[in-house]
Length: 193
Image (cartoon, rainbow, N blue to C red; front, side, top):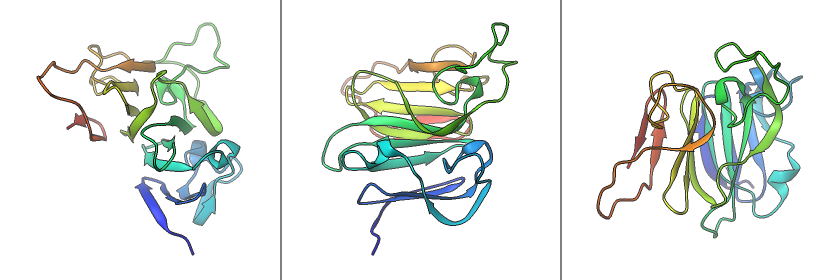
């Protein structure tokens, strides 16, 4: 049988204790990661990603409105690597459009999406937690640095400005004695506890 170890919803995902990630729901812009020919999955469907099958599998999944994140790490290890699928414009995938025209800007770039779950380079320090907001993302590394990227018109990335964040940037957290972020939440705002 399958032993579910993580759940996420917007589209729906679960990962089990092996390297299997199942997703279902609306797959427009490949948000579920099932491929661009698979628009809707009405039953849980295995994501085919060779990277997910390496090591111990996917520890955590998170869904935004049109993008998703996956944290690949050992169940017993402290941190790992982040993968993304879905819509990529305006920084949702943590890097600019690899096929952008020279005149593209974040506000007018063409819509683009990941063809399958792909690695998002964030930090040389392994990542402990991930969360998607509606159109932005957060990742907490093992040193307690909170990274943010994506749409940022209302400052939801917490990086000190209101421009879209095309590549992961550290947030501007207040210095508090003995504080260290351990839990993350986000939709159109962001929270750290």
